[in-house]
Amino acid sequence: MSANECEATVEAALDVGADYFDTAPYYGFGLSERRLGDALRMPGRGHAVVSTKVGRLLIPDATIDVSEPRNGFHSAMPFRPEFDYGYDGVMRSWETSLHRLGSATVDILLVHDIGGFAHGEEHPRHFRDLMDGGLRALHELKEIGAIRAFGLGVNEVAVCDEVLDEVDIDCVLLAGRYTLLDQDSLELLSRCAERGVGVIAAGPYNSGILAGGSRREGPLRYDYNIAPQEVMERLASIEAVCARYEVPIAAAALQFPMAHPSVTSVLPGIASAARLADTIALARHPIPAMFWHDLRQEGLLSPAAPLP
Image 1 (tube, rainbow, N blue to C red):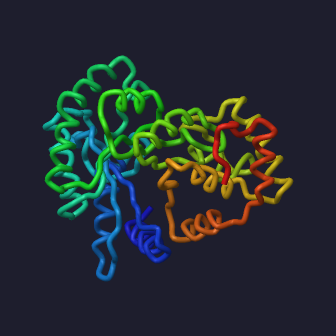
Image 2: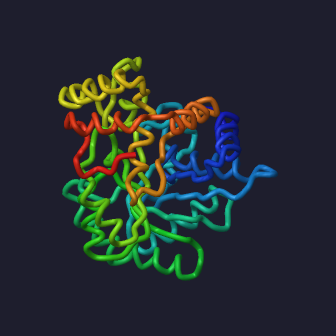
Image 3: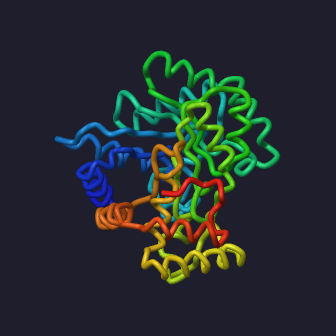
């Protein structure tokens, strides 16, 4: 997308009161933070809540071919990511994010992609770096008022429990783990409610499969990969209930997570002002109570999941 599209999307979001934006150094290798900061600094823009992430540093690399996509991103930013969850790495990441955002403060810092899902056998080493140094940096930044809150930005439940076993955090951005297709995080969400930890339910479309269902053009992706057969079968059953009640599956996907008392925000990816308008309409689409009860009765929602 172009810089102008980004600016128009941010402006449209603020106009309708959608004023929380999440970014990260990794997204576009710095491009996301630069564009978001530029858009938010335009004259007349009100205050927005911004979260960015720590855990990856951007290392300048003159050998990078910026004309080719890297890690799924098209970006002219000549940097390569390098994991660092230690004290100095977190402090450096926070400061360089401020430079890219063009801001003196950031509201929320999230530890990005800690856990076995991202690191495999390297997870214990990165986890100790976070426990022994990175968290001390986050506490210091909050104590001096440089940030308002800190937490995790991850795609897995296990590492959230692992962190909560050792320390207190303010919030968890959990991508794709509390959705119409996946409620395996319910025990974690209950634990977050008991501890006063806010949950940002990101990725409500599970990488796109719930945005348009089986009728969507192109490959159907679930958790960044081609959807497996068992997911397609579950999707077909959900779509049958949607058809019965004439409910767009994307509307159900957006509205379902908000019913949980731990969830403070649902965070979809929105790439244009037109898509933003569609998303607001889906979030406000009337859905009868019996729709949710039918999903539960047919075994498509966990009995423990709060219903909208």
